[in-house]
Length: 330
Image (tube, rainbow, N blue to C red; front, side, top):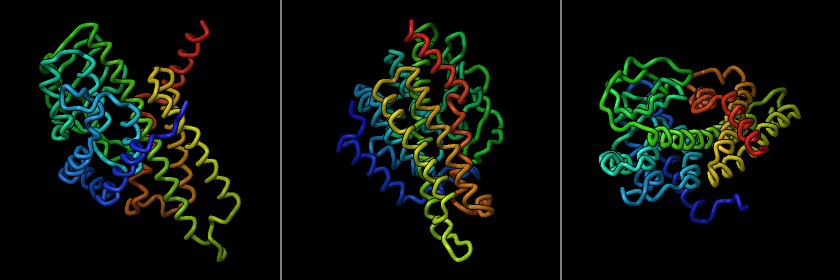
């Protein structure tokens, strides 16, 4: 099986990377954390113009088709740049509405999501009860354990998070009932797999950003007149971090090619843990300066643990992997 992106896929990733490099994402992240959503929304609009948001919706609703591999490549770039907002949740909502098979609901919501003019957030019965950035989203969808899909009312007061740019709140009670029944439950399970896969891709990109920034820093930081990057212990720590990320990468691509629940859980587990270890390496090798909020590194450091736990904690992903192996042995 070929895990390398095609030329067209690689060019798409390069286009996103160039756009994000020219967009001063750290300023947008800080503004988002302070409640100023305009820079982040403008950034998301530019990303939508590349076709990124169309990759989770069928062509019948202005999308490009359900393309998990291409979307995963894009979300690696979002993680590498540290883009704020409910990007994973918006894509998961698009998948949920696409899988539901309700033409009226799809026509009502999907064109806006594809165009990038309306972000969405989502809570599912087996996931966190908190909605991400519900105050910034145009729509907050909830799926109950009884299989009810609702458009939730206004969110409660945002709660604190390790990452100030990830505002969490409980969706409002009640809200418009959009659909119910077994089909909602099945569509929600599919949307959850996509959300877990795309979060794994974000973890991979975030880990890469942390590693790159740390490598650049240890080339400049000196002790006893020598760059600390030349010390053997530092080299070993960086090499271990790189190996963690490189071992996670093919798991993410495999899960995107064949989104079996066990494959997706393995990708999320590997990428999430690699991202978190990259954050610990970055913090240790930066020393005291790594704790300062003024350093852009902090924007990625604070994302590592929330992303590791979002849409499947390590223990949940391990249980899913074990479950898949047990089923495969029967």
